[in-house]
Amino acid sequence: MSIKLIRYSPWLVHFNTGACNGCDIEVLAALTPHYDPERFGIRLAPSIRHGDILIVTGAITKKAAIRLRRLYEQMPSPKFVVAVGACAYDGGVFKDSYSLRRGAREVVPVDIYIPGCPPRPEAILHGIVKLLQKIEKLSEVGSR
Image (cartoon, rainbow, N blue to C red; front, side, top):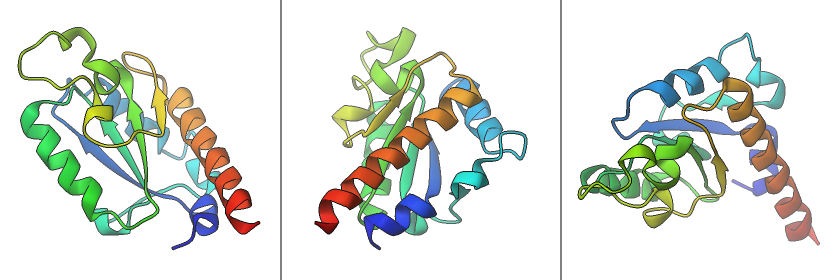
């Protein structure tokens, strides 16, 4: 699939690494009709093999890192990653734990970070729209 098509109809896949569910609840809230993500073409993908954007929430444990990498590799190209919350960024309050990676960026290439503990649904939607703008710029450069 081309980058230009992803810009207009991105399908999201949400991966929770086993966090406190604060970010998960906010991600799901951002996808409700109240915030109307479909006005940007954003929809949840039925399968990882249909996803364009992987949303990662929670601290990345060593076991979750293996699963995250496997999911990322199963996504079709081009693919993008959004890390939501402090835990996905650097481990959050658990960052000095022996069983954690230092954020999702150690496992997969992250395109956008959405800070907060947990971030508000508006911030999550804003971050995804920023990623869509970044994708649009990539498609413009690629078409030249």
